[in-house]
Length: 133
Image 1 (cartoon, rainbow, N blue to C red):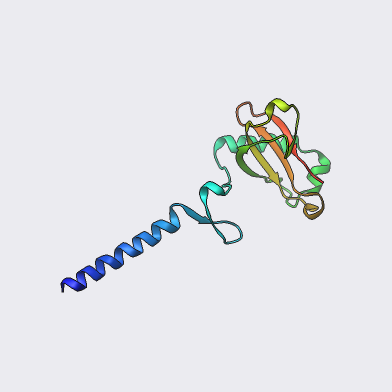
Image 2 (spheres, rainbow, N blue to C red):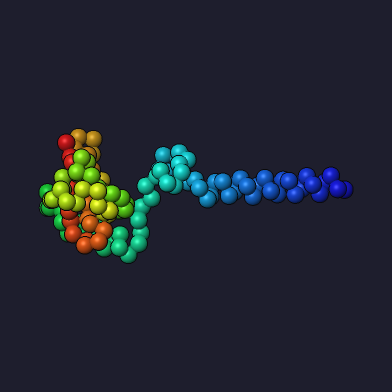
């Protein structure tokens, strides 16, 4: 009886540990790969992120809107840091700033890449664009 109780408790602890491992520090990305949350960009859904998306959306040109894959111009918003090496900034003073990166999927993604708009996280001004080939 005692051996059976130890086995059941061990099994329960093993199951709880497995569940914690899969839900706490790891998650599946779009491709089904497990990634640590600290190394994976998790989309922002905060009110600030929504505001940044609205501002970025208003900054899109009519030509860019025609190139989007979706008609509602829905962008993927991530909070990150911008670098002048990966973006065309309106001023180099923004290099290293915390920003909202709003990414729009395009029809010419393979050729030119996605449209990326950087919105400053403090002032909510558009401070740059992603570099498209």
